[in-house]
Image 1: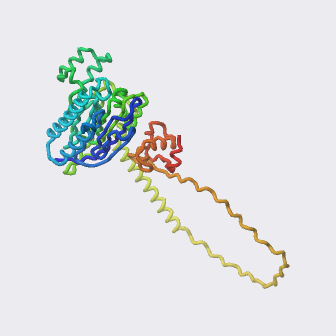
Image 2: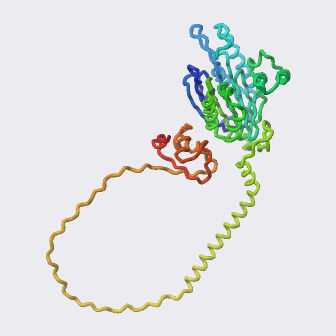
Image 3: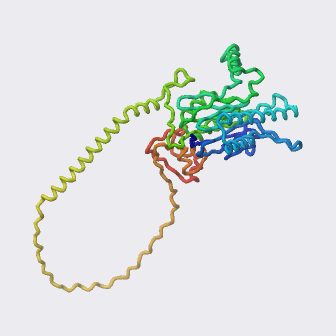
Length: 444
């Protein structure tokens, strides 16, 4: 039984400080295809369908006009996406096909680098790929080289694919011992030579409403720790805000490599029978943290849910009493008006009026009319609209509604309304002032 997904996705990509051009590419379900056209770019999409494909790649494109050779992982993703959309196939077939496409492309690119004698220390050798396939109500991730995919569902946060280079990296940092790193390599049958030269496929994850996925390049992975990424993804559901916040934090920490962050959010899931998959319940503790920090926000939400029915019935009771009181006073007022005696009508005395000649007014000087003072035209007041916050509203959603899909509008609108960073402290029925865009852009 196929399922219809409503997916919201956003990607931010930026050139590193020490790079001549942006070598990161991304594939946004065939709607947006980036191949080194711009150094800094942003794209987003919202669509419904049963199958989606997303990818982020680093240094996985090669062209040689003299030899008429050109290979690009994005072109292979486009062909793969077209093939699985036209031809029917189960999840196993699509997973094997994706693995084969990435593996063959990586081999071709490695062979061209070897023929051109590119040193191992050059950035071209640090190829990376992370791809996410949403199909048949499941999610499958594929990574190669320096690519990384994270998965977030309520309180669950994890790395989707086995990071083959992570044991060695943790051992170098002194977090784990060399024996623990070797034990991890033996468990997953990883050798020192294939730590970054194999495509790693994740196990299928059954999709639920509210699931979020993050695809990042090594320019972000090397400067941000997983705890910070988890906090951002768990705090907000807005894919645009998450992608922008992660990339901007990587820029602040001085990442010299190209940076790309793509966030995919599953908003709705509907099966062909019309039923919906509800989001998973939030666990009491995350799997990655032994003692998660308590927050007043979540505690308040749980107490409200506990007494929701009691509050509802009390509100109905008080409303009924108020209506009965109003009805009582209206009826009493009508009865009082009916019982009051009519006012006695007193006859009006007749006054005799004698006609007396009125004196003729003496001639007076002619009065010249006072000239009217024409008011000077005043400048038209700047029209400032007001938006009342409704349930489900965020400041980024309000900014997109009135100005467009750019996070710069969110920051300026937050500063205009004196909302502190990170501009997420708005409440229901709060009045948000919406100035013209010329006034908004002047906000510093």
